[in-house]
Length: 408
Image 1 (cartoon, rainbow, N blue to C red):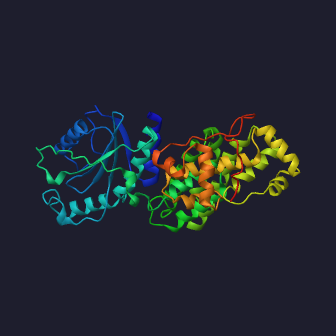
Image 2 (image 1 turned 120 degrees about the vertical axis):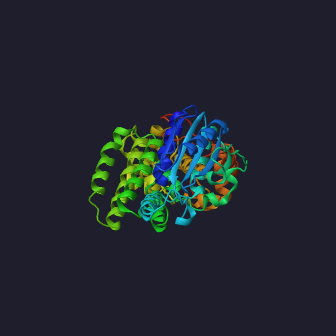
């Protein structure tokens, strides 16, 4: 549980570039991290902490228009913020606190330096946290505007139970989650495509709008992906240190893109090496080729040429070493990648099908049901968290008696 919350904090702070911290609910000395909040506002916060039910997402805006999100779960409070949701005007703030132009200017500079975050972005991160903890989203929501209350009056939390997954608006852009899923699977072509889509939407907080800041976000997202894929941190330390040092020397977006694309390539290699490291070099080569072209048609002739074996010899060696036929391995890895996309994004099933190299959505659904026992739509509805860091051990049986789901 603590590991999941720790990962969620890193994910929120990396994805949204906003402060995120978790404390125990009984931590009564906890404060809003703003120099402008008063002791009376702190009392309201403590009352919220005491009265908030578990698995509640509470959005709070203080009298200075600073925004916070309080996420209550597992007897812990996750505080996200402060952040801003739009511009401010001097007349919207308490005039007694900003009595002269210098105070107003100082506060405006402080406010404008905060990250600009939409509530729906935090909502999506919280949704992923609840799915990771409980296998489904069981949260409720509330909004508290401190300005509406007398400082001696404690606001009542009115909870709404609308499931986050019911809101299509949450998933209007899934590129960040899609990118991470591709890196976790070692699919270089897919990860590169996802990254380039990220670069086309410069308004997103995790895109390289600011070069150094953007490189830090890319590094954090990629590090999370590799950790989820089961790649040991000692194997990634040198790669990320080199990326960090070279990132300090970039002087343009183009250089940053080249550096990031190199990071993606090397990261996907680490994932594939993790999957294939126990096998002989020809089999390693075949597995690397499969993951590099997972979304494309993969022929036995191409695999044989890449691994420098005849088709018959490769087929025999692959089944002996990996424990399942080549076609079954390709099918399994495609379905596992699809499973991650179903849970972590709101991509249409048809799109997911084509992304993993199967153009016929009906055929894809049959393959998916054969692999997991349920249809893609049911799998998504259940919110099952995939855990596929490593391939089946040598000698293990195929995941199903049929192994033909390798292409459309």
